Amino acid sequence: MINSHIFLLLFLVDNIFFALFDKHNSESMSPKTKLSLTIVLIFSAVFALNFNAQNKGNQNDKTPKTIGVSVSPSHFHFSQKQGEVKTYDITVKNTTSTDKEFNVNVYDFDMNGKGKSSFLPAGKGKYSLSKWVNLSPTFIQLKPFETKKVKVTVSVPSDDSGRKAAWSILMIEQEAPRDNLINTRKDGNTIALGIVPTFAFGIFAYQNPPNVLTNKVEFKDFQFKDVNTVKALYMEVQNQGDGIAYCTSYIDLTNLDTGEQQRLKVKNFTIVPDLIRDFNFMLPKTLAKGKYLAIGVLDYESSEEIQAARMEFEIN
Image (tube, rainbow, N blue to C red; front, side, top):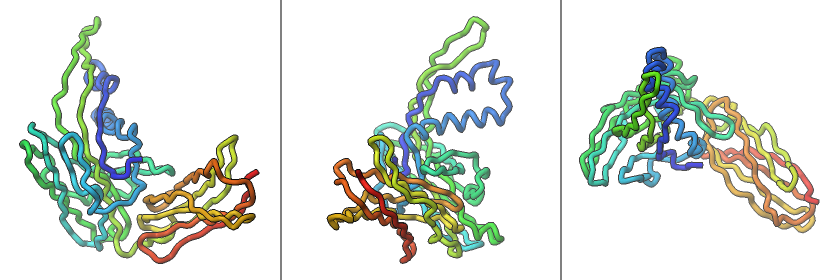
């Protein structure tokens, strides 16, 4: 998974360009369909890179850099009250000797049980933050070695909607010329095929108002799985609160025959309201035979509380 939430997108486009630029198809498409295809074009590479929102970060993270451009911060974690308006900065730096141009946009996203994100137009998410966000400017030009800032103003409503958690993703998208490979078909329609090398930076933005509950992540399932030669402990948790929770999860194993103890790899993740997340903790192949006690732990970053589940299993 990509922990930084900053993404290098290398768009390899052929079929989508065909659909967008074919004369016949283009004329028959509704504006809504064109918008949908454009969003697919922008984000298809994000999915290929296993783009996910499950790892919690902060504004002090190391600034990601790629092909001579850096963007910071890597995340925003707001905690604004109802009716509160605040402005934040995104810093974009060009460390190359060539000019760079970027569009600045905001989109909504949903998350599945594996932490993968699916993207939506601004304002279409159930917990949309985008409708409270204003970006300025929405287009930037950077000369070689130049740095500029984008202002992100978040205006939380004073009505009941401002009492809920919300999230979106801010995208700094390269504006790059497209090198066309023109091919005229026998039917007279012209198609534009080729590769569009471009990239974008995604910055997840989460808003947790002070009133929400961020420590209501509960265990739904905890069991031992033995499928062929793969042995794992399966954990399923659900965010039953109304706030975005940033959690650490781990499993402590005790060999009941020898008393030997070990901790399975720690997992850090973000879980939004209503979501059910599931994880497989792979058991070491060298794990000795015998009976074991497993203690699964959920630790909330914002609370001293923890959740725990226990079970016993046997390795034969």
